[in-house]
Image (cartoon, rainbow, N blue to C red; front, side):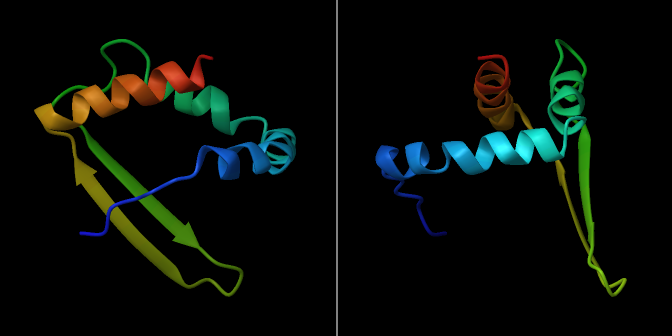
Length: 82
């Protein structure tokens, strides 16, 4: 497994792109906030992701949330709410 080493300055450079992404996709953040609401996601929750490209090709993946994931999801929720 490769570890992520992120430079905080690189995150700052993404801010304009992030703002544009939020403007272009206004329903995404409210969806993520609802999905991470208190007690909606718990241990055993299945999260599925499907990506369908412009030609109709699809890739899919899923994860079943375990107890170790709950701390990460709480941190993610805190970022979304900031």
